[in-house]
Length: 140
Image (tube, rainbow, N blue to C red; front, side, top):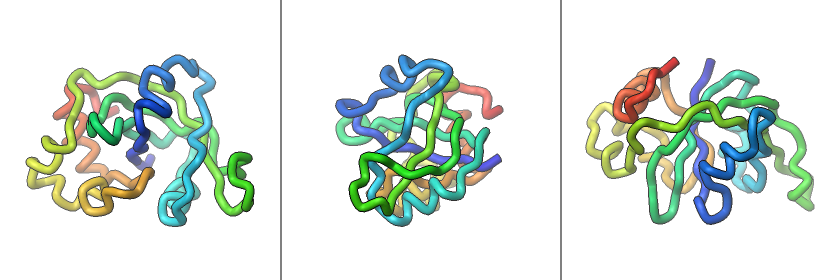
């Protein structure tokens, strides 16, 4: 299993919206960056990801699971980009802020810190464990 971080502006698509999508989940569409799209192409059903509220909040608020692998994004008129589907798994016990992530030396190489503009980034196994601990949730 691989781990990821999905960034969303809460005013556009929030954790509450993701939870309301239910067991079937929702499309993670609108990604128009080749590196982020390549990250989504690498995803398989069952991969887990942190749901991160960007912009003003800048914090991990939940965990999602990939429920459908990469396929064409109908919102892309060029036909170059695709999307995956994700479903909510659980909310975090304690939101983990970007400031807390940056303050943790073991997370210095986290893609969220190094490539802050990407909307979908990989998370290493060790990084996943650390952030889960910070969030007060079981990493499984």
